[in-house]
Amino acid sequence: MPKEKVTLTLDAGHLAELRSQVGNRSMSAAVDAALAAYLDRMRHGAAVDEWLAELEREHGPVPVETLEWAARLVEGWAATRPEGHRELAS
Image (cartoon, rainbow, N blue to C red; front, side):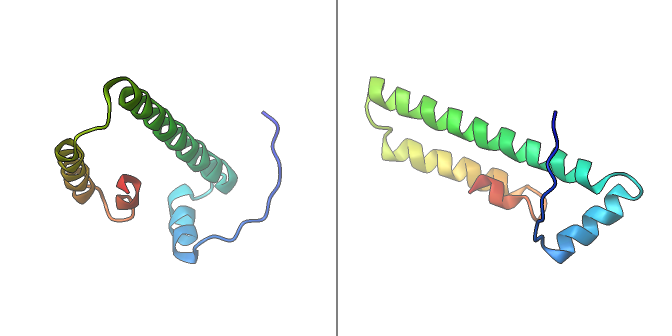
């Protein structure tokens, strides 16, 4: 796959942690892998949103009680995630 050189502004703490994790390996490869994982999550989220919209079109709106139940599940799951990963449940 073709590569493109870019300039990024990143959180200094995140960058220092990444450097300590990758050591002598490629920072570019680590950032590229993280970006690929992020894009996968975004595509998955879009597919779930599309599926939920289809269900709503076919079966009507989701009852408020069901939405509240789902929100509690997500909040419980998010609370078990390591610090720095909790924003994924938002």
